[in-house]
Structure formats: C-alpha cells, structure tokens
Picture 1 (cartoon, rainbow, N blue to C red):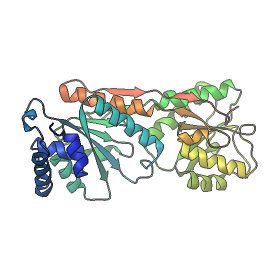
Picture 2 (cartoon, one colour):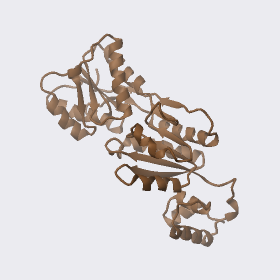
Picture 3 (cartoon, helix red, strand yellow):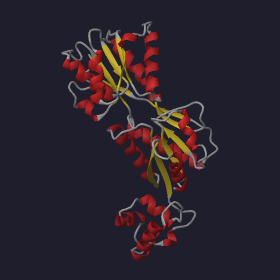
Picture 4 (tube, rainbow, N blue to C red):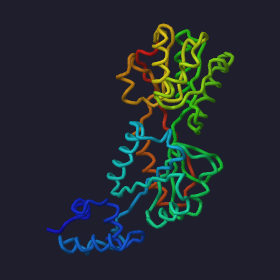
Length: 332
C-alpha cells in the first residue's frame, strides 16, 4: 500500500505544504529538504503516478502581517480564526501554509520568500496594516484576499467584521435600558477596526441627539494589565454610566480598575467589550460583549480566495460578518 503525502509529512516531521511542494516540483525548497522528501517518498512507496498537472495539490498561504504585534498576538481570537481557516482548507482539499510577516525584519527578503513559495493564493491578515503597507504586495502575481481590514483604494477582496452594526447594537441596547451617559474606551493603537467602531459609537449617539462626551472617551493600551494601569490614572471623579470598549482585552483591564475603586459593575457602571473571548465567561462579573463568529470569518475568507483563484476576473468585493451582542452580568 502506497504512502500518502500527509503520511510522509508526519514521518519526516515537516509541513504537509513542504512535502506537496517537493512532490509537485515547485520552487522555494532547499535542495537538502527536496532530497530528504524524495528519498523518503521512494523508500515508503509513494505513488508518483498520482501527480500530474491536473491533480496537483493546491496551496493557500496564510500571511500573518505583524506591524507591532500588539493586536495580532497569541489570543483566543486569532486561534479561533485560524481554526476556521484550517477547516475550510481541509474541506476544499487545500494545503495551508502559514507565513509570519514581521515589519521589523527585511521586507524584501520576506516578499521574495512569499513569491518563491509558489502558492496558488494568499490570504493576508491585514489587522495591523495601514494603507501604505499594501505596496509590498502589489507585485505578487497570485490572487490575494485580505482579512480583517478594509481600504477603498485597493483592488482586493476584503473579508471584515461589520464593526458599525456591532457598536450600534451595543449603544442601542444601553439607551433602551435608560443609559445615556455612555463613554468609550479606545485602543491607544489605531487600526481600521477600532476606527470604524469609534465612528459608529459617535454616529449612533448623534442619532439619539446625544452630545459626544469627550471627557468620557479614554485611550487605553489593548492588553488587560496595561489597560488596567491606564484606567486607574483616569478614574478620579467623573465617569460614565456605561463604557463600550474597542475590544475585550481593554474591557478586562478597565473592569479590574473599576472594581479596585469600589465601583460596582453593573450597578454603577455597565461595561461592554468586543470579540467574545473565552475569558468573558470567567471574569467576574461575566462580560457583555459583541460576539464575532471567528470561525466563520476565517472560513468565508478561504472560500472567497478559492473563488478568486478559479476566476481572477470577477469584480472585487467586500464581505462583512456581523457580530451580535451577547449580554452577561456586566450590563444591567
């Protein structure tokens, strides 16, 4: 019985993408690795007759762009996003290759390596990217779908969170509860998602003819410990009836600071986060938040990239995945 490419990858303790690239004679692999894979393939009886131009394994390269790494970190949000990407690749018989792109390293070398990987398409995580960062990818010939950010100026497909709908739902909920003194906890690091969320907060307040409370809008570092330190310095006397945070990490830190000052949640202040991380159920009180369907976000991105690979002439689109408000005990 012949061995499969996946079995070879396990035996050699290397990625399935690397084995596939060797077996399909793709560039970008060192000669030592190529020899190692081919030697093992012959030893274990791999059936080379299965490989031809029609049946070659297709590869999707998930490029994780890190500008500062403050937002794109090892959190449950990105773990669940990756789960959706991996499952969709598996369902569509694509091999997933993961590439970390660090802006602090050599840009040219990293772009050259991406080009050499000879993948069939690139799923680009643009969470931390600004408009200028996309210039590095303009000469890449394979289709690119951008995940988790959006720019009107660019000719790419974009898969994003519907930030406007999410924040509007949160503000509407609080106002329906009789709360009108609503503050906002902004991230001190600006990304497109956070900008859209803050703009939605302002627009929704204006819809109710509520003046934007500038003294209740605070910038916090998007990590629980640093947001806690930032919030402690802010909370002196004047605070809101409720705060909406750019993400759950900021909300976690702010809640810790509030509780240390004996401000009761939700009796004194309601708090709403964004993302619905697993810790939302564990923190005391459990955090109300906008639930982003992270697995679906990843799966939709993969499916759109496969569609783009099959038909490169389709018009570019933006698909928005809507979050839903998940209320817990941090709101009245």
